[in-house]
Each structure stands twice: as structure tokens, then as C-alpha cells.
Image 1 (tube, rainbow, N blue to C red):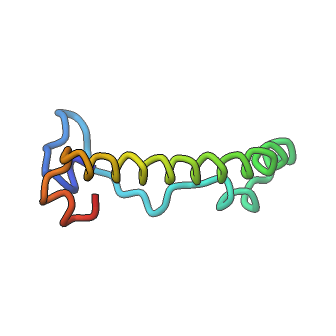
Image 2 (cartoon, rainbow, N blue to C red):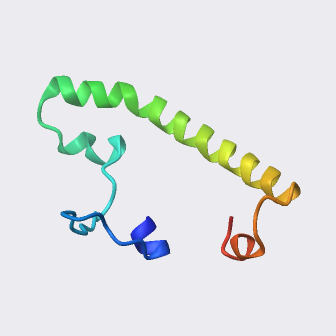
Length: 81
């Protein structure tokens, strides 16, 4: 994120690598062959979705509070924070 959005150079010895898409549990369940792992992902997936939704709501609350308290610069507001 810092490299892409802020232009911060990578530390020595590190190379940039693009990730096509983050492998979420829902996107890999059908690709997993091991039945125990597949079952584990099926059990964890509803909790993963719930936690993602909570995180999203929390982030929205924090962003709103930051804007109300003036903790966000006009540039950040312009770019969607």
C-alpha cells in the first residue's frame, strides 16, 4: 500500500509482487481437495464474513468521527477517507 499509494520505496532485498486477488475462504473452498480442510473452511467462512462486516462498520464509524473532529485533512476527504 505504501509503495502504490505513497511511493515509499521497498526495503533493500524486497521485490514488488502483484497479488491477483486475496484468497478468501469463500473463493478457495471448492478448490481445496483435502476433505478436512474443506470442512474447516466451510465452518469458518460464516464467521469470516461476519468479522469482515463488523470491521467495515467499525471503519465507517471511525472515519465519520475523524471527519467530525477535524482529524482528517481535506485531501483525505477528497480521496474518500
